Length: 266
Image (cartoon, rainbow, N blue to C red; front, side, top):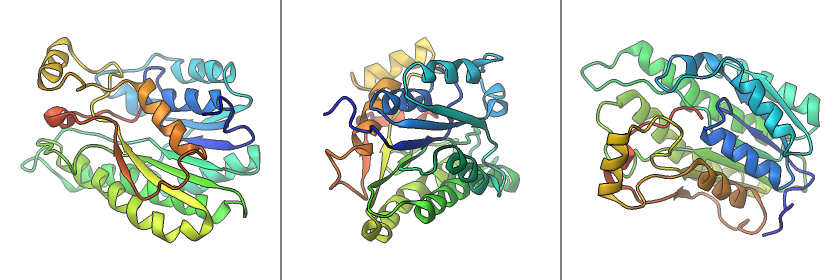
């Protein structure tokens, strides 16, 4: 694989808020491969989660990415708002002129089983995990330049392989990305756009306790992914070496019941 195989291309990556997150690892890998980067972050979400966020972490991460990639821009964006996908593409296109790679990494997660599920909880998950991802794909397809390859990569979860009790709203919305990936790959094939999804499994982004880590490793020696490994897989799908692969949901590793645990929005 060429070390600069994405030179001249621009990647839009959502959910790049924490240095330890999957989104950050993906952005680093795409930047190292030569891609220009436009990233989004939303610190309000991570402040509410157990893993938390440092006050200036997104800005620190942007500074780091600028030391890696040729050109980097970012914006704070609440993707749960209906107009956010169009506004995000407006800003990205104004900055770079084109987007060649879209990585739908941002996600919303709240705990809650079937006895606890509520309409507002479902709506919060749907707004980010489904509506925003679909609208971003639509903007990408509408704005793709002719005669250039396009790549859409959705970061999904393990809900179609393993049960995830206690996470009903997350499960039903994230599973929609698997269905979207297959159908959209067919619809956009004639446009030169490949569409794939990556299921990272449980990924060590700072939320895994020592007790949980031991449990996962007992169930499978490969039961925990690294953000860096997911970044490398996305980089491969974003390039030309596997351009014939489309419509696939790629599991980073088979982790058994490890897929019962959330990963957040990176």
